[in-house]
Every structure is written in structure tokens, then in C-alpha cells.
Image (tube, rainbow, N blue to C red; front, side, top):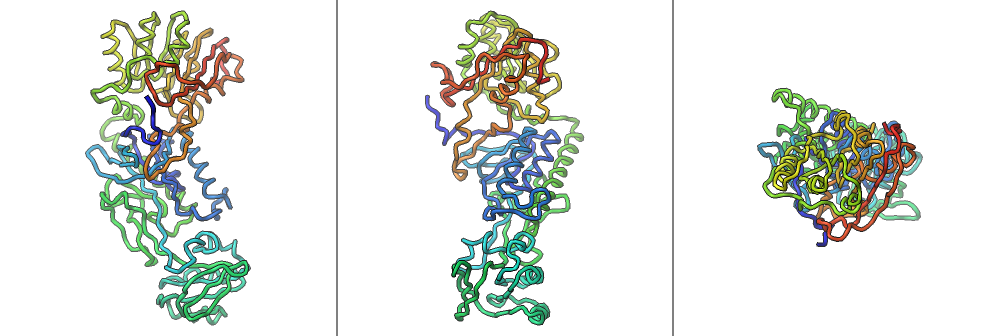
Length: 533
């Protein structure tokens, strides 16, 4: 059976918080939440507002960094605590009894208890030829974002709104020559105009026709034939919150305070007009630079954490987002997997002498039952009670005994003090933590002389580019501990001997026909000392 990576089957996942937008505000909010042990999935369509800019400024600690660099670092920090960042697009968000259903490109969906909107704004530029293609470079809108870069240069400011002169005194201080053009009778304050003219700033009234390249710089051409040479152009935009996907919720918007568009209405804690939906960053504050947008996202993330914690306290529960997701995955009537053992497990374990085995991430039990049928004393562990209930039913039907434990791999000592002759992790995954708790527990479960067998999907396919308008990549492998990372922890550890670490085709007859190459790690623990502990 072949597998089409471009069109995988539709999938519905569960999380505490769905974050829509993966730039500064969204990632900062996600970081706060994952550090509160909340399951967070960020959906990012790769279209941040500052994408045209080569650098961002005024961000303490990252002055002059490329916007993409900040997003990359932010993604890594969120993933370090097990948060996921999915490349995809949100198509619609609907209120449901158990939270919100977030519809994604490719037919997938998220069920989330809370939604954080960090989609930013769309800039609507004046309809002047030549502005859009230079936006974020030669055409700027903010003296704080770009003023230093055009200092001592010739700047033409095109004013299109009544409050368009707000940044003008700053530009007068920064640039060598400033010319103001009042485009289309914007209705600016007469007193402000008089002050500018008295200070020596030329102010022209007229209609700008286009902006063109001219002798290594720019030329601003007016309808009346006036031509103004410039090294940079300052102009404002009308702003609109990116809320198309949120339309079913009918969130309240309001005019921008400067009269240049609209923003999403929020209270000081980031709550929108719909209970359970929060917003952060430019979508609700059109004037925020990247640093305050990130700070706002961090604050709103904390408010969402309080909201969830208060709800859980009132209900007397301590839900695990990871367990909730996997229990939901296994709650249907139909089995997810074939019931057959994984092919790489069969190849690697077939000749081993049976002993005590720990099957981590056992799922419905195809591997555990196969091992029990061959004389192994099996303990099967999974975070989902529903999965293990299926396993027990299948084991009883086949007449074998399998001990089951509902455990989160990142819980303290999830496997107790017992040691095993074989610890098997077959395509299992557990979220990262900075101190690698799950990895340490996995290694500690192997007895001296015992074997660790870890098999995972070859990851190249996860790095293939996708069209987010058509598809969403529904898992983020970088948020989970992988086989290569396990191998890296063992390669310099004298307590371990790696016998096999390779990528190879999945054995013939393997039940699953997708991800047709496996990464296989087989290592033996040779001494009690464990450098990873």
C-alpha cells in the first residue's frame, strides 16, 4: 500500500489551547502555556505581518535580527517543553459543547478548550503604484522600526489620513531632507501643518500617481507633474485584523484609535467578546512593535493558564492534555492499527531469549501480544487508558497475559523501580522537556545486560514543503524525543553499547505501508552507571 504524504487521512486532535498564528505574540503565549503543563498546538500559515522586512528593531537582546530568526528560536523554545507548531492554515473556528473546533486545511481539525488568536493585521496600503512591492524596505511606516536605517537621507512622507502627521516630528529629527505630501485631502490638523512649515519642512498638497526607481534611488511622481527624489518613503496603512477564519464566532471589532482601520476588541486580560477566545499582539493593538507584541502574548498566555486552572479547580480535576488527546483517539469502536506486530520489532527480537519486556507506547497491543505469545513476560505502558483497554481485550481473546500500566512517560518514575531485559519503543513518542525526564526514565528501565530497541519513522518526509492552503502537517516531530536523539544520548555514555543505529526499508510484510523507512536503534546497557541520569 502506498502512502500519499500530500494527502494523508483527515485527523482530529485534542489540546488545551489552539494558538492561531506563530509569530512573536503567538509563540510567546504558547511558551507561557507549555510551561504550565498545558498541551498547546500552534498553527502557523507562514504569513507574519513583518514578513517583508529584512530586520526587526527595538527588540532588546535581538536588535537587528531577521524576523524569521526570532520565529525559529521561538518555535524551538516552545517545542523544548513539548508544544507543537504545525505548518497549516486555520479555515474556520466553531464553538462546540466541549470547547472549540478549529478546522484546518487538508480536512483536519483541532478540539481545544481555549483559542488564542495571534493572527496579526493586514496592511492596506494607499492605492499608489509602486508602494506595495517596496513595502517593508524602501517604503516604511514606523520611525521606531526603520527610522535609524534612513537617517541622514531624503525622505518623502505621503500622508493619507487625518492623523498621518503623528510620526512626522520624529522623521524631521532623523533624516536630512523631509518633504510631506498631503495625498487626497487627508484632513490633517491645520495647527500641525503650520508648525511643520514654520520649521522649514516643505508641505505639498496633491495626488501621488506612482513611485518609481530613479538613478539608484526613488522618484515620487504627482499627478500635476511634480517629481520628488527620495531615498525612502514614509506612509501609513489602513489595518484590518486577520479574522476570516474566526468569522463563525462573530468576534467584536472596533475602529482603530487612530482612525486607520479596525482592531479586535479585547479587555485588559486579552479576552474577546466570546468566552474562551483570547487575542494577543497586533490583531488587537495595531501599533505594537515586535517586542511589545511578544510581551503581550506572554501576558495573555498567563491569563489563559489562569482561566484553565480556575476551571479545573472548580471541577475538581487535573486533566492531562496528552492523555485527553490519546484517549479521544482510541475512544471509537474501530481499531486504529492492524493488530499485527511491527516488522522491525519482529526482525530484531525474533532471535532473542524471552525475558521481561517493557513495551512503551503500547497502543492497542499488537507488539505486546506478539511478545507474550513467544514467552515474554510483558508489561505494556501507554498514556491512554482506552488503548490499554483494547489491548487487554485482545490479549484475553488470544489467551495470553499482559500486564498494563497507564503512565505518562514524562511523569516522575513512570515505570517504577523495575528493570527489564528488553525495553521496546516502537514508533512511540513522548514530548520533550528541557531536563529530558522522559528519556532518562526510558533508559533507567533497562537492566544491566538488557536491550533498548527504539524504532521510529525516518523523518525526511516531515521536512518536505507543503502548501498550507491545501494541507496541514498534523504532527510536529521536533516537539517529541526521536530515535536519533536517544542514540545521541548513548553514543558517548560508557554504560551503553550501541549495536545498531541505521535507517533502512521497513521489512516486507509490515502492516503499515506509509513512512516506508525506519530508523532503528538497538543498544545494550553494559554497566549500572548511566550518564543520562
